[in-house]
Length: 221
Image (cartoon, rainbow, N blue to C red; front, top):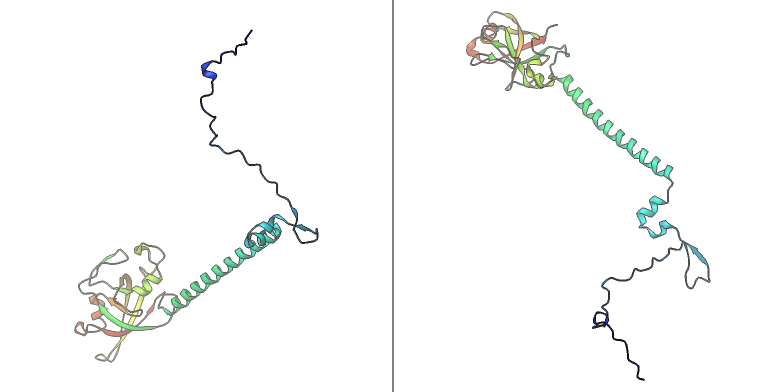
């Protein structure tokens, strides 16, 4: 009796060879040995540490202890603070010396400079006062006005309201003329020791036609 092969269902019949997977098989991770025997070294074991496989800079860093790294970092910070402090100190010292040479109220000397008068009249000054040509007022140089400034508001400048006594020798009378004036303004075109006066104060010291004369002045307490 002839044997018959069982029929294979159509869906189980292989129609084409199995496709290869597009994914690679996972590669086994290679173990990292801390010791390795190099050829030609007579089986001498060579010890290799983690830092041996790092770039030179990293190796140098890992070669130090944590304490050494912290001490180096602290020394760098202290050096940076010292440099910044020295630079700031020199800057303040330079500013202080420059201020000492300016005719500020802290300098009790007598100063000599050009005297001029407002043209046109004073009006509102940097101190916020409205003045006229008949008042006993003056404007000091922007150099000392700005040096004395303590805020961005010029009305709060410590020089505002300060009193100055001006003296000038007048050959026509054979003696000195003096006036006391109040600081109310800032003169942009004045040098450090120059003063710009109201017309009445200028004519108390010189003739209006002279326009510019030399006088001496000092701060009053």
